[in-house]
Length: 265
Image 1 (spheres, one colour):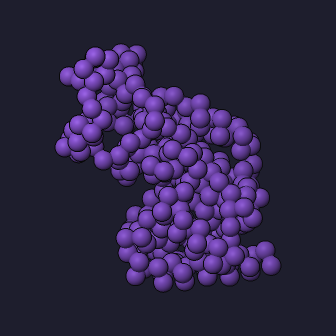
Image 2: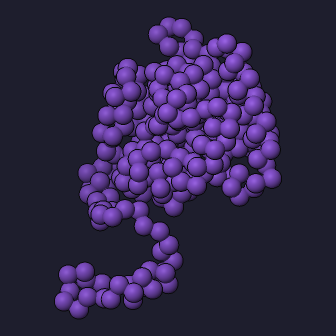
Image 3: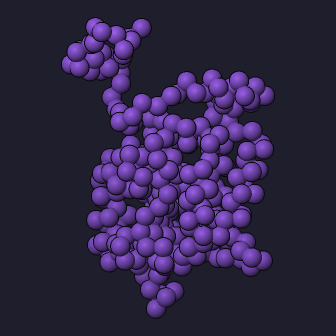
C-alpha cells in the first residue's frame, strides 16, 4: 500500500510510470475525491446495496426526479436542483454539473449525449475536440453559442471512463431534460447522437437508420401540448472518428437551417 504521508515519498516520475503500468491514462480533477464514501452510502441504505454498486436507482429516486423536475420553472431553479442532487452515482464521480451553454432565448436547441473529460472539468458542454468541431459546423450555417443556439446534454454528469449511460441513469435525468426543454421552448431541436435520439424520440434503431429524418417531440406543458420538430444527426465525436460521414451531417445542418427559416421566417 502506498502511503502518501510517508517520509519516503515516491519520485513523481516513478509514480507516473506506475500509473501507466496500471492502465491509468487520465485524471478527472486536481483535488482528491473520497470514492470510499460509497461505503457510507451502503451503510445508510442497505436495502439498495445492489443499486448503489451497479448504478441502479431505487424506484423512489426515479419517481422523485419526475416529481421534482415538474416544479422547476426557471433555468436557475433547474440548475440549482441538479447541482443539489446527492444520491446519484454519476454526480458522485463527477467534478462538475455540466448544465448548458449558449443563448437561452435561441430558437434552436442542441441536445448531446453526456459530458466528456474536458466538459467535466470546465462545467460547460462541448468544449473538447468534438465541441470545437460542432462550433465550426454550426457557425458555417450562421449559428453561434453567443447569438442563436442553446446547448445541453441528456446527462449532465460525466459517466466514468466516458462509458455509455445506463437506462436507469437516462431515466433519472430525462425528466430534468424535458423540463429544460419546456423552459427554453425552442422552435427546433437538433439531437446529436443515438442516445439523444433514443431518449427523446424513443428510437430503438441505430442513429444511421433515422438521422436526417424529421420527427416531433410532444411535451405536455400547462395542459397544452408543446410540439417541437426534431432532427437527429451524428454526434461530433463520431465524425472525428469517421470524417467521411461529415457530408451527411452537413446535409442535416442545411435541413435544420431551412426548417428554422420556414418556422420563424
